[in-house]
Length: 312
Image 1 (cartoon, rainbow, N blue to C red):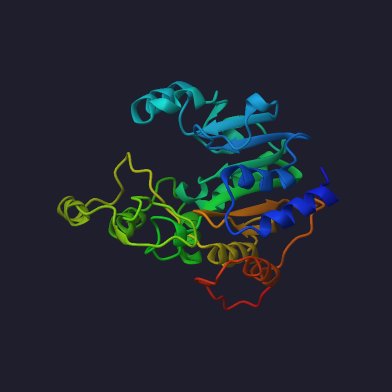
Image 2 (tube, rainbow, N blue to C red):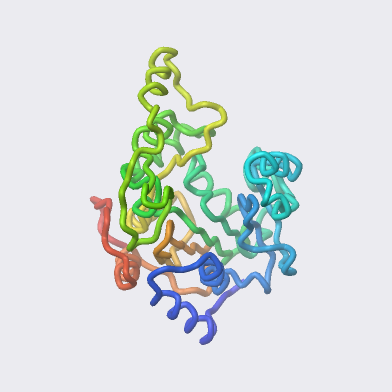
């Protein structure tokens, strides 16, 4: 499926890029200009109770989650019962990988996820799994937490070495190191008791897990080598610019077919990345283009993982 941006879509994207903070609805609208969900079939990965592409709006969309519909209802009824009516019907439960779980390859026109990538134990494998289920030219739209706007503020950005190690080890569970870093470095803003915020917000940070020394002593006492089974924290940590560097390192070693189409800070908690398989019809960004575009729209350079390889 060859895509192109209409003049109206390009004008809307330009207007959204000019804003310093995007609402949830505006983030959704930004992605929709590329996904074009009214024209194809999509797969939403990890919709939880706030699907980006709602079935009840008439879109042809399948949902895959780590929990079944019944399990999700049970969880939500205990943690946030006021959201019970928002639980969608889950089509597939994530177990073996997207292609195996859905029984489909080269089937979907697009995939989308919001605040999912950072939780997955094997980032490269995930990208490869998404590629398998997408048609030629298929689009993957992501909303990803920016550490400078979330509880990950003090955590180091994930490195290519860490990501590649997880891939080579065929990791299916989070590393113990990511759990420890979450305990030690996670913060919240005491001004409004929030774990995410807008870019211009005043900050007064304090630790989220004040009992983390006791938890780490427990790890040492029992020589624990894995996170607790019920831990669902952030395995990976990004800024928008560190994601660019990481993505192009993955590309340099031919570990993904995806091209980067767009990247944009939302000014609140996260950033948007749009990836595409070859022959999408969209213009692709080089690494230099991606940095230039990002910094042209309100985003201040934070941490660029400089590479020994020339920009492509």
